[in-house]
Image (cartoon, rainbow, N blue to C red):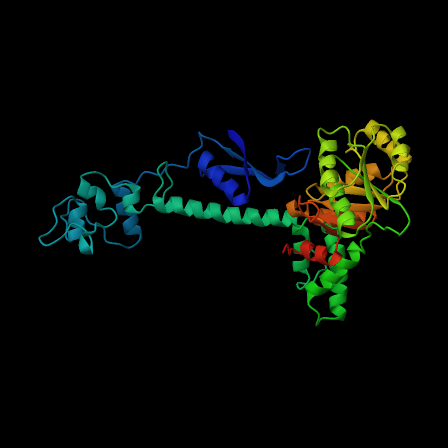
Length: 436
């Protein structure tokens, strides 16, 4: 028995690989969705993994040999036919050909148009007729083309049934939801919203639709999602009052680029006096990257290597309207790194703390980060890489789990353009499948 796993983007592609490598007799043992590639759980692709098996020694049952002439004669008598007595001469052209005689004058040796009938091909070639030529419906090592086509058709039907089973496994039953509301549920789950949360949202949509059936269901769904997402809370700067804002989060989520976007917005578009502080001295070229941004925008930059240096850096910019702080990316599983981050934040005492998360991460990973940063404390959520997200529902799942408001979302690498306030109206449309 040969067992092998196949990876493909779709189930149909995986089944095609199974057939091509293991043959049409292969048996599919298991199918599952997996994530492949990526870095530290990020940028992974969703694929289908199919486990199949085939036994090279297993063959289809050979065709049974044709019954002897005596048995055919007996069967004919039992059915009420008049069998030709043994030794009798052929009385018809077909019988003459079956007996091995030459065709009658004017005969073409077969059917109308010169085509041989089933059972006649072997006789014309001077050999016994094959099951294919006689039309016998028997399975054999060299199955007729018609039977192979039937086998492929059956495999296709099995493929379709398996696809339906997978869809039902991935999309649990929507008990209690009206047919008009079920498309909303499907759209949310396909966007990555967890089934239980999607069901809860759809029940609220359904309740509103029953009270107002003339309103389109999608409009009601957008209203409910907008309420779930809540009003975004952004940086609040008061005239004559310095505001210290710190960004924190795991590595690779784009904190430094996001900080540069915020700095450019408040300095260039709002005309505030902005200063930057970075404690990210661990990542290669992180300081140089931020320094380049500051030189382009024309902003001062302070680099602190220890928490003890933070008060002096703050004091040097006591006349600033806004101080943006870039912390080092910390692994939520590393206790020492999290304690070091807490020490920096204690020295900073920021007015606002933003937890930065990537929308390319899974809901499970995002929740783990939230739980690890919760003891340190954060005020708002900032999500990056909306343009790269294939399952933006992680935003809603994490928002509900964290219990903190949204602030900004980033939509690309361009500074300062690709950042915007997390509009609940726009995000609700995205969660319902509208990515325009």
